[in-house]
Length: 512
Image (cartoon, rainbow, N blue to C red; front, side):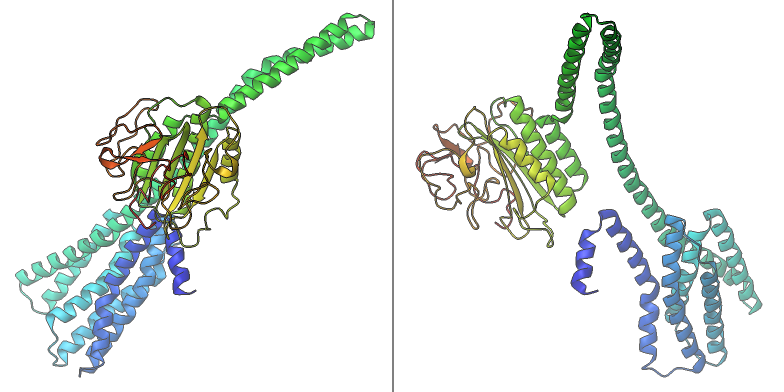
């Protein structure tokens, strides 16, 4: 696998998976970094045979310890098989390293206390670290105390004083606790994070199941009574028809009426089930994106009440765009703004962090975007998706507020042709000012890009800071200036009399 393939695989990982890998590899490096560097430097210095044996055993131990530590984490997090036999090999290698150190001292060598102390500490980390993940902490503490007593006894057998023995016991026990602090605490933290991740998935599944149950109850309430009546009346009609009674026709007429009523009520249930509220979707999108660590800027004060069909259509745009941000991008910032321009509600949502392997805008055939096009086309609206920059993505939805013919080719009605910097479809061309909101010093959609207001109730006019009302057919810029919509220049959506764009440049201030 190439380096670029591994990099793309890393980008596709969830945040929890990235933290898991980072924590593990940090411990792996902590275990083997110093012994490996010391082993390489030992090749270029003269040492006794026991010292070289000790260096070699320590290198082998820490390399094996990385694999044992990895399997121990898998056991602690996912309840996989515990690596007891490899851990026993770790203990044997540690004892061999300590024996080589004693042989080095008896051979007349003068090892550096700091150097060989660090080697033993990393060897101890490679052994007791996995052990701390395989047993309960009480048992680990008991084993730590036993090892401390044994080491103190061994020191006393070599003629050490009681004070030296006490220092040795305290040092060994402190070393065990330090290992538990580094390894077991990291495992506990990862366990909590993975449990939260699973809880989020379960919560989403439960929400879907609850919605299905609610929909099923609604259908049962609507159809249950009507179907029972239809069954009774049809049975009665059969009996009357067998007797040759003309009342059978009346009963079948009643059955037909009940069937039509049931069909109408089912349609009403489905329509209510599929409708969405724009304000609810905006508040929900802000909460979900903020919880994912994405910096959100919402400016959704159109200045007037939107018709319910328009609100429902734009709510579905917000829902689908939010889902795409979470699934298909590693976004750090996301901006949403809405304006009413020439009796057309314009909703723009843009984000950064577009992945390299993501398809170009307009080339996908996903059911989400196709469904949104159908919803908006029913109201005479349009939706466009574009990538104004390398890692930027922008979705623009336009829905007229008045009844009339849908805009042809996605261009707002106007006498002039598309102005400079726009395409015939009404979407900004490459390098042209976009519809995502004002960039630095660019004309905005009635509000400056920086310091956009929080999510507000729809239909309530929220005056912008530093913006003053402009003349009809103009869009206020930052500082209260007005940009005429009929110039047909950069940022205009049409020629003379055309509808101006919501903003110029990228509201996120990114690459456009």
